[in-house]
Length: 101
Length: 496
Image (cartoon, rainbow over all chains, first blue to last red; front, side):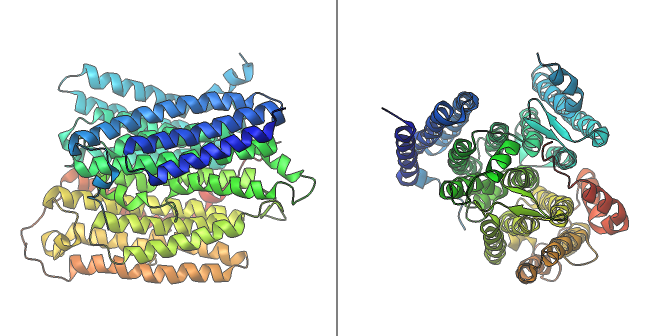
């Protein structure tokens, strides 16, 4: 029988993969994918906790909001990445190096 | 619909007015042709002023929550509402005079600023983790766009991208922490979270997962207040963003971050102890963690500021250091400490915005943010040099300027909680800070520059600088009122 632990393990794995992706990727779009993984791991947690422990729908409602916010955030993120691409002809984060000190 | 929601609407007027202004500004920016610059500016100023005026009568209302415990209405929330609206208003007044922003239309800038202001005041009053997350994202997403407002400027774009990536990761991590907290306590309401943690059978139960969850949430909040080690975005973003946006970011979202940090830790993770102190739960003793964060933040900020050659970068590190001092007020867990946080924020608002106003004005005239171009500025513009020196002296904490009182309250709160060593660390840090502030003053006043042509500040920036200068110098004359307002605003609604 699949229980809470299974969901939590998967979500922790997703979270770690997301963090790893954010830390190792040089491509701005890949980093955004990593961020999506982090947010989705949180969603999985919310729904699992809501189903197994809290006994109310708070978690599921929260997850719906998270999905919406993630969409809004990615819309802005892609616009900014696009704007950078127009300027540098690249989405490689190593090229964004004019600000240092 | 729940009749309570309708009945509560009149306590929500400030937010409603800001939302209305936000929409009006967007429409006005489209329909008014050549007049739109003036019309959007006037609308924004009026909207914010009206929201400020509508906040004041609410202080008389009984503390409580609104909208199914989503938003708190207590003295602390109202204080931050008024404070944040005022900060936004001052930035709006500074925006049209900035040469950096003059190339692009300002209507969208005002609209974004209003959106972020709405997010901030909701953030400062959230008592639900869902509301906390949503309003934090509202502030963040709006700020990302504001930082990248100069579309054709490489630095602005780069700053925006860095802000976005750091911001999105830290809010993602915070969200994961929130889900763990929800999992342990079964609720997203901070008040219920506290009851669940207080009622835990054994302290050891869940304490590891609670620690992880707190650290993750701290990552998100620490990002907003730019505390070390979540500060990496701060110098780059402050340098690359248009200076009015930098001034805004260094004061308003930071203050909102402190508001929610205090609310989260005080209503969610601690309980009232004897007298006017709070105590942490046995299962999660977050006090030493935040204390270390405060010490590291102020020390790092001050040391890194020592060798900065760019004024915006220097003020960025200085603002990191100030976040450390403010955190010190919060972490001592007393009402005195909370009052110190509020006092510090009031003084910080005027002195820091003032310093940025002068950086904006000097850029308008000379086109440079580099410290070397400030050399011999006293001969070019005595007014700008002297007022800059006043703001820097206040940031140092020299009496009788406003900044001194902020530091005094924070250190006194630490000493009163028998944490004298903590206050000593803060005082030592202030000594280090004297060096880099004084270096700017020396460059401006004593050093001789090649350029000697006089610089005349425009009348509107001069007026605005006076608006900052008067409270910075004269706040002590009204200390009774400041004391009364801040001590009356430390009340947090902790549930019935």
